Length: 177
Image (spheres, rainbow, N blue to C red):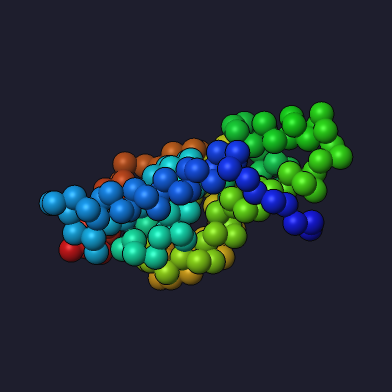
């Protein structure tokens, strides 16, 4: 893989910096406890929670659901709906840029970032997800550091059941004290 150079023009560079900055804001609140900040979200927010946990070691926990932004090459090959189709459409028009595209995306890939995670994680995956295929989130989970658990929901698409949301909130409450 060739090396790509990131610049200030990449949207996710700014988004990931905002995730780190969000910790500083949450930790600075008068009613906040800097040791009790977690990142969670579904889809793009799930991918951002992975980035936050990877790039902000002071986070106490993370809980991504059906995470977007993971293992980019795989969903471009198999997704039938959702945002990865935009990359496929771009590469249909400019196939000669494939190596450059994936080299650049590797800097923003949750699978690569997950290796930096130290905070405990409580992940979820919809086994029938056609937007963010389960193999993509699982790639990030498998590369991830820290204590972690994943729940696979066999009949879910790009969502999690309400019971998972409740379990996640209980898990985060226990972790954050």
